[in-house]
Length: 227
Length: 227
DNA sequence: GGGATTTTACCCCATTCGGGGGATTTATTT
DNA sequence: AAATAAATCCCCCGAATGGGGTAAAATCCC
Image (cartoon, rainbow over all chains, first blue to last red; front, side, top):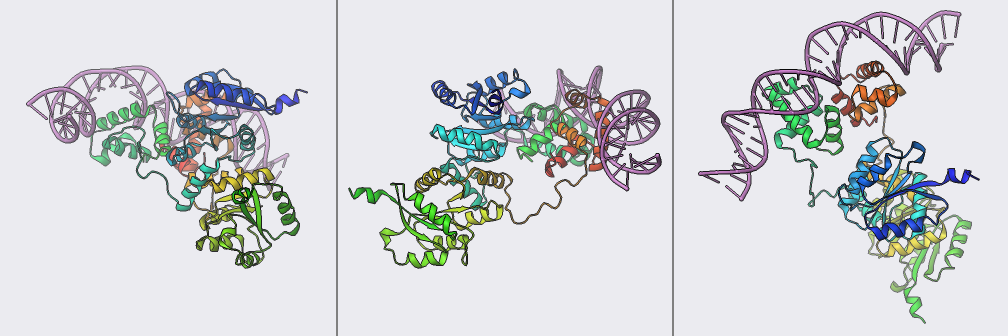
């Protein structure tokens, strides 16, 4: 019965450690409930392969390593969730620091499992996440509880980059105005500068943020809470 | 070997539903790793029995129902954690409302399991909680993630107006694309519509949102989480 | 003191945007 | 069936935007 095929969950793995990835793939292949559709060794690799898939073939759940060469798992998650993709992402990693956990949640990961999770639990987690649950390793959950209890984010000390882009003070100021929805001329009047200057700043901001429109800049600025 | 006895986890159940309590006790008794030391049908019952225990016999993990006659499971948890007792408490309940979850965390519960959790998982959770983990049912965890993500407490049913503007479905769809930072032409290609149509929609969106630029629309859309 | 960065300002040019119209077709509601 | 609202497509036009330059102060850093 092909119906079986229809019901299987399409799962993807993004993991750079060759042997680990291989073993995990092999293990998951034992499960009839799953269909391993895309195994990548980096985010770039993943995105590249992803383009060759049709809508109905796209992975529904991704096991995402955090520490990856090039684009990190967190950044990759951010991009995936930005797009319209209907996909649930499980961070699958050895890291337990508050910073990474918090960031993963912020960018939209719906699960967080440690790599030593028994394979049966991993498979259950994959199924649960599709049903709207958020499988989380107990030791991670403990940290989450603390966050909720204290209502605090782990921004405290280890804030390597509050601003992912190194905008200069002046640029941030301008960006704030842009987020307010003002035009260049309006900003210029507000800050007593030439409209040309504003324009130059905005061009530089775009370069640094890697966008090419105000809308995109506003979106990024808000999402990454630069302003 | 009595050593075995030493290593077994002393577990307690507080649950008012007679049959459920009985069955759960029977099931847990199958597990050699556990020692069911105190089964109570109410918080009062529990505290009363607790006094008859010596220090070395006190339960280390408690499966605590929330809805109890008299003192609630949350209140009981609060009192237990107020005292010096070295005990980990797992809320074991059918409730999934943000309010109860949040309160349970506040008073110091370290785990939150739904009553339909498979018995094996319950036992694992008991062991994990003693190792500093916080076992949480996935559907509960999802709510936790939301709390962390939005940094909000479930103080009220709040959300007086999820969408302050009555955008039509099509308009919301277009708005989403605008938030992505796309140009009218790009949107048109994505949605297989004429650029003129997109433009018309956007003009209407602006009217409804009372803005006059993409940047402003994006900001509003994100702030009011329309998209 | 000297190089690097930031801030400021300007030019040209093609594209996009925003606002003003109008018009037809398809639901939806009444 | 008539009225309303939603969704689609089109035109004109001036203003704003985005991208490519150049360049001179001011400031910061070593």
